[in-house]
Amino acid sequence: MSEGLIAKRKWWEWIETKKDRIFLTERAKKRYGEWFPAEGKVVKSGKEVLFPSGEEMYRYLWAGEEWKIEEREVSGEFSFLFLLPCEARAIIEVTDKVFLHLPVDKNYWLRRKALSLGILACLQPEPTCFCSLVGGGPFWRDEEALFLVPRKEDIYIQGEGELLAFSEEGGEKIKEEMQALQQEVENELPSPLPSYFPQELYHHFEDEEWNELSWRCLNCGACTFLCPTCYCFDIQVKMWGDEGYRFRCYDSCMYSEYTMMAGGHNPRPTTKEKFRNRFLHKLEFFYERYGRSLCTGCGRCIAACPNGISIARVIEELKEADPDA
Amino acid sequence: MFEQEIRRKAKELLEVKAVDLVIGYTSGSLPFQARPTLVSSPEDTEQLVWNHFCSPNLARYLLPYRDSSKKIALLAKGCDARAVVVLLREEQFPRERIHIIGLPCPGIISKRKLEEKLGEIKEEDFSWEESGFLCQGKKWEIDSFLEDTCVRCRYPNPPLWDDLIGEKRESRGSSVDYLERISSQSEEERWQFFTQELSRCIRCYACRNACPLCYCKECFAESDVPRWISGVPTLSDNSFFHLGRSIHLAGRCVECGACERACPEEIKIGLLPLKVEEIIKNSFSFEAGLSLEEEAPLLTYKENDPGEFIK
Image (cartoon, rainbow over all chains, first blue to last red):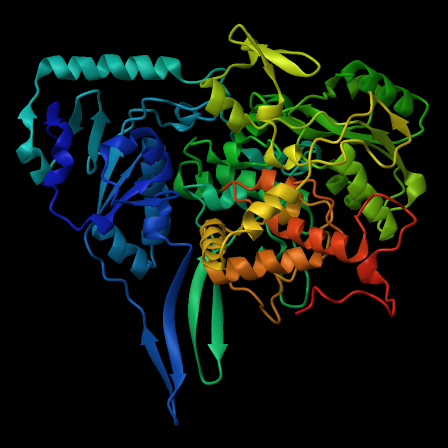
């Protein structure tokens, strides 16, 4: 990976790609909006680019004697996505694993292989951030993604690709400068952060604490829809007469319909079961299957919750209930 | 702001076993936030808080106890108590199992407005007084920091209570000007405004779930057979949901604005039910949640009912 390259502020204009194929997440826009052209499309989180909130899968039509099925494929057109480390980790370490694990999700794959990621260093952590607790950090980077640090007058870029052909060589001094900056931001991370990450939570499945923890939850889906790692979807159909289409859309474990069985039985009938499942999936079940937690510490759910539920605080409260912690 | 009195009252009610539970507010997980809490033992009443950030409508938390035998004390601002009145009128909860601790409300402060005007804010830089606060060496009136829904509040005092803690307050405003600003726009402008607002909706249903009066066991938005609304947050599906919800709240909405404050996208979602309530008020001289006796106009038929609003 090329190290320590500095590009001028207008480096952006050199990218030869259609502007509507450039995405910037809402959060990245808020922090670094001035660096990017207005033509770029702003998305809520990176997952929206790869896994949209609604997507047609196929159309069908009764053609007199047989059903005709027309598959919908995405174009796989080259796109650029600029996002913060917590959002990038959600794609690289979570949704990629989920959707590209066998069987491969075709549309996700077509979009993903055409997507170039730019990770923007996080220079202004918010009070809701706790990325370091879950293995990330404000300067988290990935080998295959461009890493950018917007500065006052120029931008530090680390990575491969033709983009760098336009840049000037930086050198050792800049590398040191970047390390100092990283240290400074990491020291600024909001405190106190939960200092413990729960393990083997299935021992706590029947704990009384879940009643208290879940009590104020409204069972709305704000946390799940805004979460960059929540990937659950539903498949629905729209039809009129002899034709229609099948599509998928986001679903949320907070909703009753999510676990509703044919016949009317619901294995997660109340707020407590839904809430417990959400946190156990984030902190335990996903970990068991994929070896990492389903949370990148971005804190969006904390900021969005109308009733002040915080995953960081849930972790703290589980700790209090855990005699081994 | 009478926090000590509230704690004392809650403690007393639990000690003499007049109630089993107290539903109130405690400090949030973030600065400038309060969140709902459930207190069942007298010692725990110390966690109760009462400040300018006690935003959620606590009447929302009554219904899970409908089929229990628990007696509940509820901290209620003007709008929370109005919602309780509607629930009582609709026979959703027995009066004898609820003890209303009424709190004349000074208005809820919007954290966003604080940040817009004062920049980066820290809790320790604030010193709160009865009608305002000290910050950055200056005294600020709270009026310009209030949530939009509280700026137009006409009923800060609970219409029904068992204990009232604090001095009664004057009404702060009304929704007339706000609605007039929208009504006076051209059709195109209004269409543009609603398109812009409703296309931002992600249909997380925080508005519906924060509403104390949206208590259907199965919401039309989640009905599977038939499925009225698709799960994709398109403008058309979003509009259908919000218009449907407003109609279902007709003559019932207490204008608490819990829906609007719960919205993670900050959509002006309280506007639709507010308009419906204006029509109800003009047509039937009725406002929801003010009296236990008055008949709800849309639940009663009279031969001379006005019908001008149906076009």
